[in-house]
Length: 193
Length: 107
Image (cartoon, rainbow over all chains, first blue to last red; front, side, top):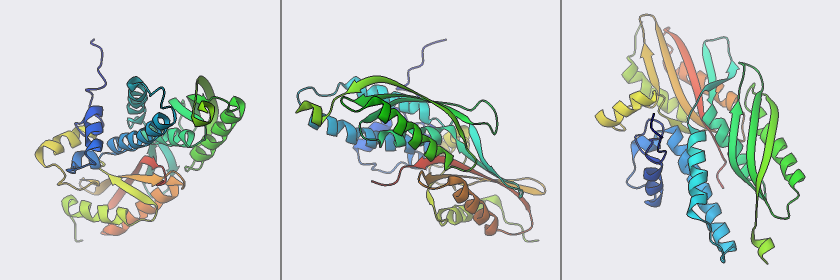
């Protein structure tokens, strides 16, 4: 079995790679490509690229002496691409009229990542979801970086609370354990001064 | 009974889904392999909803994005009702609503 090159792997059913999407975003999404615009996984990856792009620009502006390594952005985007694959469908709610309502694992990954990245001083590096049995609670594992000077215990508590609230807002979903690993500490403007 | 074909029905379902309050985006509900074929044969020309007819039943699958700030199950339930309201022709219809994105609110 040969090693898989994720930069050449296409996303969803679009036929486009991570690099293609990056170029598409750079072109301001013109000319419009229907296969990308109609594909949920592509849209999730593009949204994440936009978020990460904003974040990178902010950090570069704040840490002018030491610009971010290209590998930082690439590593995160490869992780995002892995996470945002649609994956399994998880039942959200049941009805008696033959309606089936499901949420994709990819949607939950995107939600958790967005919730985490919105917390001041927190950067999400990896998310893993386990849904061992139908109807049972989700187990969530998150790896993150915390801004230097931010109290780690507070950041972790807030992340756990916000993620649980966001996920449990979705139909019948329930969250069991949320394991958080703080694997890195980063600097920002306040610490540079 | 006046029977509507799946190719006529799917674009009307797309319109009904997009009109539901809380639906941020709609995506192709076809499987990835089917989308790959579609990309080559008729890019962007087909409807987003996937409608499959059998002898006496109809399966409809739609794929949506919902704000992460709302209960996606409620929105999806309203979507299912909207889908059923498009063509109440008496054909037994199984509706599958797939929430493919929980979209962050616009900054």
